Length: 141
Image (cartoon, rainbow, N blue to C red):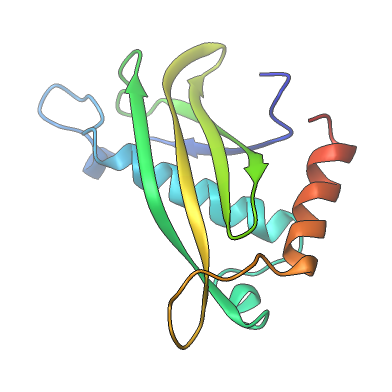
């Protein structure tokens, strides 16, 4: 967990579990989406307005999950997020969902920065890149 400089706490709600009180697998991507939105807020970008103000939009190109152990109703989770790589127009976030020290789910998303009008890939705005790099470097990447 030392490689992560940001996490968002979340408690599992009743509507997110199945009859065995285990989190339905599709909810883990929602958990990550909530955490990445808070990551952006933490670096000074209110999503989505802060992205569109930069003249771009972001789309997830790829998402992968690896399940290690189930989360259950009322568990207190920590969703860890970090930007692991930034290319010209794409970037990779790694993430882990933990219950205390126990790893439950790990994964990655690869997102592409696009032009607002054409939705074609375009370079990552300098401001966006600088905010993420500054946050990751200064907080322990």
